[in-house]
Structure formats: C-alpha cells, structure tokens
Image (cartoon, rainbow, N blue to C red):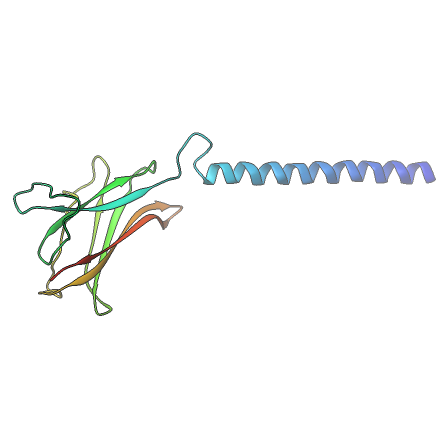
Length: 149
C-alpha cells in the first residue's frame, strides 16, 4: 500500500511539473506573439509635418498655424495604420480627423487645421498613430503640437 501511495504521488508530481512547464511556455510564446515576434520591431513613431499651400513640404522647424495643412511622417511595422488627429481650444474639441497611412487607403493623408467649430485662433493638437487589433483601436505612438493663431 505504501509503495502504491508513493507511486501515485510521484506521477502527480511529474504531471504537475509538466503542467507548470506548459503554462510557462504558453506565457513566453504569447508575449513573443503580442510583441510582434522576435524579428519585428515594436517601435512606431509619428511626427507632424507642415505642408505649404502649394503642396510643398515646409521646413521641419516651421510651427503650424491656423489654416495650415499638415501631414505626418509615420514609421511602424503594423499593417494598415491610421492617424487620428484631435485639436482642442480651451478644452473643447474643435477638429478631428482620421486618415489611413497605408497603400490603398482613401484620401491624401493630410489634415486642414480649421473646421466649422474652429474659425480662428490657436489650438493644441494630438495625433495618434493607431491600428485596429482584435476589434479595438490601439495607440502605437503619439505626438502633440501647438497650432499658432
């Protein structure tokens, strides 16, 4: 009877150890997949670029002003990234826009810094580089900038 009890206990210990090993391997594999795997960069960047009225890109040091058109220089390994631009005056949302930054996306990837709610003056804007993952939007990178009057 004592030998049988030790044998059962030994089998249970081995089974428990195997289960723990499977959980650890699953967690490590899941983390690697979530981060894009070992060969993909998880670094994404977004930077605002002012576009002149003639469609000529202005110098990177130029500050955006009311009425300008801007675009964004984005870098990501994610498929089908979007830029979501939000501009506020005194805490009130006055402009919002979305644009796809991938081949085949509709639109021209530019944003105009005005709207029916934003008729003049300075504003503070935030642009998020977003991707849809598992039915939810995920922010990959953000840039904030001030728009002069």
